[in-house]
Image (tube, rainbow, N blue to C red):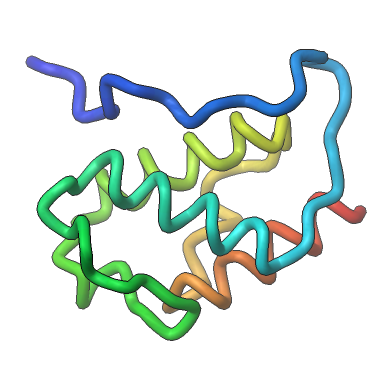
Amino acid sequence: MKSRRPERPLQRHNTRKDTTYYMQQEDITKLLAAAILELRPSLEGRPLGPSDSLEALGLDSMERADIVMLVLEHMNLRIPLVQTFGPRNIGELARLLSEKSAA
């Protein structure tokens, strides 16, 4: 079965794998939007913002998991994926990841 992960991973700004960097919610929102567009190029040109629901964008649970994993990898943040299931839109997910990166 073919992997659903995008062919082009998000560009990493840090190269150290042992450091988690705190990120502002706004920056994480941008990362989430970039990951969504990598996975769903058909959404290119559509403005993506904090109030957009991943479900309303037509993303299924596997695609959501791929998006979250890409962003977690970019942030070098290791948390159980199940902790990211509560948020209902991009902004709530960005806030959660920002809080986790600050912990």
